[in-house]
Image 1 (cartoon, helix red, strand yellow):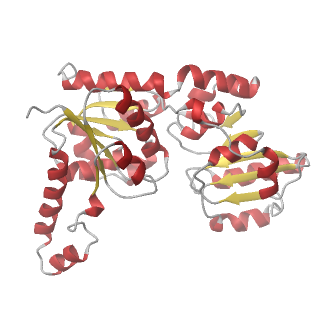
Image 2: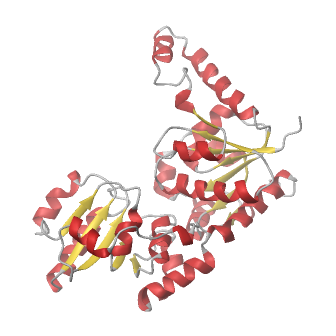
Image 3: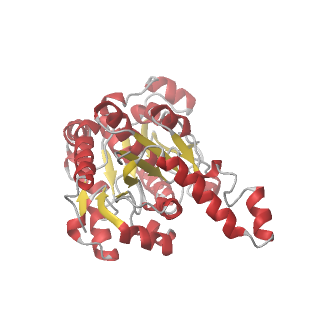
Length: 361
């Protein structure tokens, strides 16, 4: 059988930017594309069932020969770990072969280990959603090989493209920027502002500034807290809320800044649009962010957006009008530039050109 399918590789299925972006594309591709496809996951997550609804799906951690399994640990103790690694690779390749892939689509540099296990003999297209801090995290032989064997790269922003070219020696002609996109019309809040304010124990006449992301240095959660302190010193009835996970590491700063009554932390939510729709401003305090989908979601809900200059791809979207002329400009721009119906055909075209052999090293 001639190779004609596509194997999409995601490093995991967590509710984070790159897997969500891939799901957006695959929904479109299943409707509009003309090739069969399968999904190979490097690990699990909350979105596994979403991938399974779209296509045959396999995760490395389903193999009995994965690094964490009892079988492999016993083999490692017996100095037979190489056999387990070959067995894991065989499971992975058996799954991949079912769709007769003509191309492997690596959805992030975090997929490097999975690509190394797969060892594909067909062209690889790598969609890069990361900036330099993640390149340092994943630095190693697997990433070096992925960068070397990729026929073509899609960068989710010009900042990502510039980093690939400037810091990792990728030839500029091998990289195309396709901005992150969302299903704009599906972004809507399911609850009223009053319902959200009641949950967060805030007065109805308050202003709400929202931040979203896995709490940590890269997302600038500490900067969000200090922003809240500065604003609350100047204005009454302003509250700040952060969606994304445990606030344990930041409780000390919240107390020291006198923000115990003004700051809310919300665990990761499958419906962040409920909170974004209730907010007055979205503040992206990331120190480094390639092109966060949450900015696009805030724009779809007509929220004014503020971010730091030179902090990744977000300034490429925010520019000046998402602040000065507020949320209506943000909504207009996300509809015109960042709906999946605009980005997906571009990605599909790159895939078809690579398969046709028109894009070479």
